[in-house]
Image (cartoon, rainbow, N blue to C red; front, top):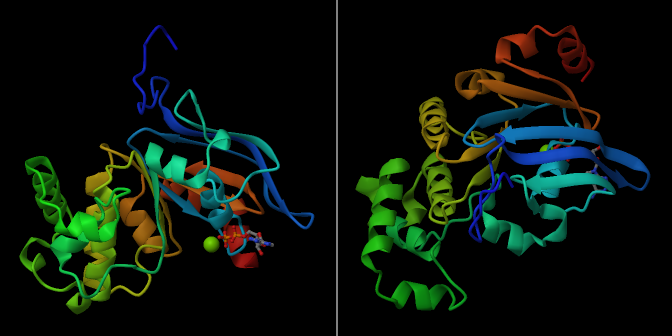
Length: 259
Ligand SMILES: Nc1ncnc2c1ncn2[C@@H]1O[C@H](COP(=O)(O)OP(=O)(O)O)[C@@H](O)[C@H]1O
Ligand SMILES: [Mg+2]
């Protein structure tokens, strides 16, 4: 591509986007959950995805991560990596990771150990915990502790963390793998107001270095983080733009009032 040789594991974002979805359709028993959807996510951007229930947001994430195969369309990671040729583990390995709503940290292990576990290789979790960390791994954990704001709680069992802190720890566990794209489904559900603000800061701090796609219902939260918002409706992109543009679009108002 353009004469630039890519090393294995590198993603070609020389044209801007890191994710290309084109004319993607997914049917469930004849019902189109995604309907000719096209979407481009730029390298380093923080994109918010909104839309009424059933719009196709979760299905879209399932397609990107390889959980669901589209009937038609193409899905590329950078210019050259065809995600439809890869299975779920290979896609995760390539650098696209997903944060589900329910935190799945290990309560009995410390915050630090949870991050350590996220380094787990095919040797398995216990082998990872008992192996000695090398300097780079230790530095990486320190860096992630800093990013997620849990430096002071590093030695505490994760079980004592608040709901919000557990969510940040899980984001930290994903960050340990240095993903290039992070998909985040409803990150602030169940959080206190203060935790919501802290989560906004955290997500904002991650953009640039990686691309973040956030699905969220809370419009105030979306407004606080998003430069660029995509509205899904009936499996397609209804409109895209700034939060103000999107919120004043009569079609968007119609869709939300009709919901
Ligand atoms: N596995 C499935 N089988 C049948 N229908 C499904 C399945 N997954 C999703 N759907 C349907 O596809 C539509 C889009 O769902 P979804 O992607 O979960 O929407 P959202 O996340 O925006 O609420 C919904 O009408 C839903 O009922
Ligand atoms: Mg959903």
